[in-house]
Image 1 (cartoon, rainbow, N blue to C red):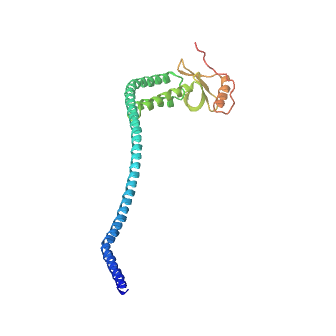
Image 2 (image 1 turned 180 degrees about the vertical axis):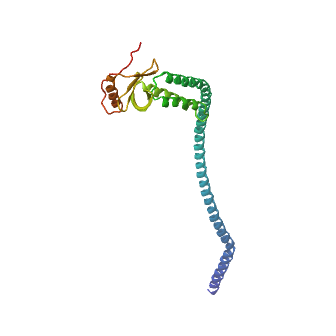
Image 3 (image 1 turned 60 degrees about the vertical axis):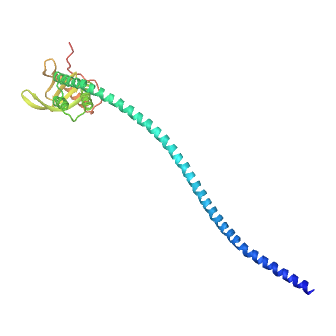
Length: 252
């Protein structure tokens, strides 16, 4: 019995010694396993980081592609605009060439128009002589100025013609000086279109009518003085329009 017990104890001790020896042998393996686990965790973290970076780069790549696509569309539209501007520039250059030709043609025309206007004023009924003569003189001076565009010159010439045309459709009263019986008198002039130009002194004692054929003033008969005064009041908007009897010479 003692031998059996001793044998069991001896076997147990041997088994413990074997387990202890085996445990000592497994320690490097366990340590290596732990190192591998740490490396695996570190590698996984690196992989996760790389995956996140890859995803970020991919998103950036997609954004860049969208920007490139937008820039391509913008560049295409810009190219169309540039082509349109180029075509417009060519058209403007052609228009400028045509304008240069027109300017060379219109300048002599304006000079002839001004000369014709001057001749017309000189031959016309002599109302507002100073104002009308100054208008023609200003037009002639304007034609010599380089700082006035051709279009502006033409506009002013047309404006002068329009003013002269307006005289034929209006009635006007204005004051001025005239030589009456050898004396310079302050009188009121009455113009009715271009068909009649009359005056009457301030005291109403003397009246006259312009004879455009004889190019001089003719005395107005006494019966017309009242109508001249009435016409002056109508021209000044002091009296409603009414029938006037005037010493107008009939056309031959």
